[in-house]
Image (cartoon, rainbow, N blue to C red; front, top):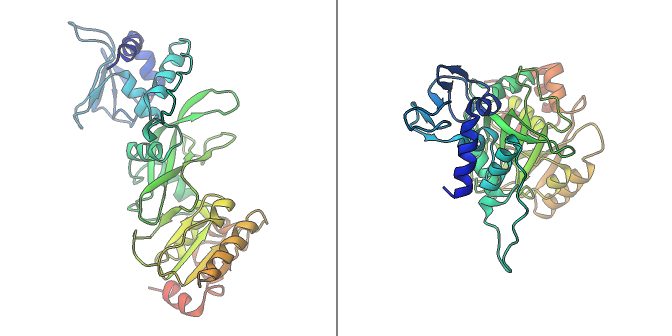
Amino acid sequence: MTGSASELARRLGDHAEAVCREYLPNGHRSGNYWMVGDVRNTPGRSMHVRLKAVGGKAAGKWVDESSGEYGDLLDAIEQSCGLVDFREVADEARRFLSMPLPPPQPQPLGAQCQPAAKRGSPEAARRLFAMSQPIAGTLAERYLAGRGILLSTHERALRFHPGCYYRNLVTGETQTLPALIAAVTNLDGRITGLQRTWLDPSGHGKAQLADPRRSLGDLLGNGIWLGHEPGMPVPVMAAGEGFETMASLKVVIPALPVAAATSANHLAGLRLPLGCRRLYIAADADAAGRHGIERLSQRAGEAGILALVLRPQLGDFNDDLRHSGPAHLAAWLSDQLVPDDARLFLSPG
């Protein structure tokens, strides 16, 4: 650990209980320790943080008896906030300690940032995804169920982070909130980016933020894939802008691979897998995504792929799913699918 990191860790240790209450709020004090589930702020008791120095043992040090992990409060800030490089961790620690931020460091001529140290990079996305956990039994699963989206908990694209770092882009203020994490991958299955949906800790939908959903990483050409085995041919698939729109289709057509491109512009540039013969493009009721649909349809046609547009009855397919139910949505879609696809994907049983 560098000298500056050691000094920050020591100062955080001087305020260990306040740090824990800020960054590990799902825990509680028990004697000279803060008890919590793990360094990612999961509820529980397996991790304990020493609050006061005892017998030469420094305050702020922690051990997770379940996983064997250990560290200091800088690690707790990094993991609970979902930060991906030391500069961000140090800045957050200085903000908490009311210390001035250091001036930007000049880069040597010709020097390049390493991907892991670059905010918003694919490596940052991979780090945050790795810090997250499966959605089974979490607030993310509850949020999706509240939207009528009941997917297999084994969907590899979906994770949950109990304390994901959120920065207000106007005021610069930061906070940590639970978040649904959706991986954006290329056709080989490599994570190139992700989409974060911050959630209300009380379980009432999305967090009350101006922009509760943000993406990062390399998005163009890639997507949030559900039900796609990397490298395998995909004769028939569906694509659209929003994750919840495509996840709603997946609920009623579970055997159909689907991809959410996260925006109209990214939909226009979505890379299609080998062997694709038919592409269903999910539309919203408004005209905002018309450009993306038209451009993707054109590209598909040029590649010899039949492109067909699926239209919802209401604003989008998640509205249809929530207000009409899966059986009604399946019946609505059956008239829009090629007859062979309707028999294959929508037949009972």
